[in-house]
View 1 (cartoon, rainbow, N blue to C red):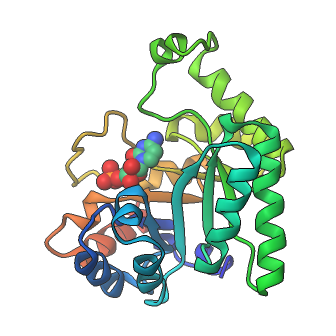
View 2 (view 1 turned 30 degrees about the vertical axis):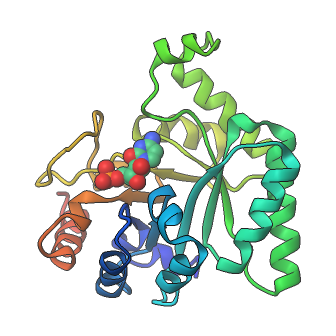
Length: 245
Ligand code: C5P
């Protein structure tokens, strides 16, 4: 499955199913399967429909990015990661700010549980600095580093702790790619094709720009999910990726 993600440009895309409407999410999954890398299940869908709803989406045959951003003491995060494995996520994530011991526990729990269930281990990504935070916000919570330095520090810590990669903003892809090497997975949201509404995102880049900077995975939501025709939206993105859009 991991190879499949790189075969066609749209296979780098995980579509964010940010809805509490199970039927809408299922319809999107049915429409988009085979055309994208997978779907992202986040806190809104998961809190509404839990593991049962997530399995219904997964049963459509799409790789799942379980975006629950675990952040707790190591033992609790390890338990949550273990419990996630039966959903067979392709990607799951934890906050890198949870620290080395928490990330190591997450990694070990995923490997052990996947092994005991005889399934593929998910990629585990660390969330660096949320793109909704700026330097003033970091200062307010007691961090005097620049956003870039903090992202780099957390990405290095995630790598040392054995995680597979990080979630970062498009503006950080290039420096993290250089800093962390080509095997380290970089996943980025805040993506807008030139023809799509920006919505509430402040700093957006095109799919082509993000991939050309070195992103492995792109998370795209509303340009696809709010479109009258999500399949055509994907085809337009694919066309843009192949024709310098
Ligand atoms: O609809 P849109 O393309 O803006 O959706 C982006 C998705 O990525 C949403 O699920 C959002 O929560 C998520 N995300 C983000 N920025 C971050 C982290 C996650 O937009 N820094």
